[in-house]
Image 1: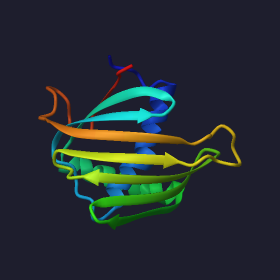
Image 2 (image 1 turned 90 degrees about the vertical axis):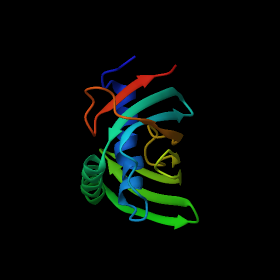
Image 3 (image 1 turned 30 degrees about the vertical axis):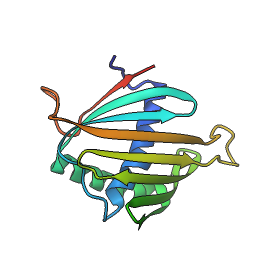
Image 4 (image 1 turned 135 degrees about the horizontal axis):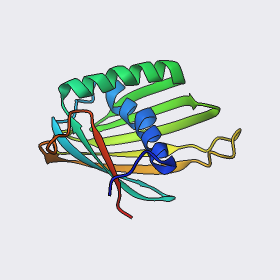
Length: 160
């Protein structure tokens, strides 16, 4: 089932744009994902699982890098990634609206067939609307993009 960008979907979309994509895009060592269709299952401790199908190619990945750099420059005072073995760890301190959001993302995978990210968003002591959360993304490459789907396009659907 496809959805419009409703409140819950906007929340997930904001998480993807602000924390997960910058993690992947800004780390010089992290390779681009293999071109084609990626299926990403996103789970959050308080929400049903959401599945995202994203069509990517080298140009859309580069565009994401550029967008992420602009977003990080404007919204984040910290966005640091380090590599420990086969694991990439990114720590961010960003502001969205009146919310300060501190997050740590741990990513592993080969980026040609799969990757997995665990995002911990810390509670904001100054804002009770942000109790924190734990988000897991399991992504797998599933083949060519769907007919008519262009690189960069995302299809979101609920599993639950």
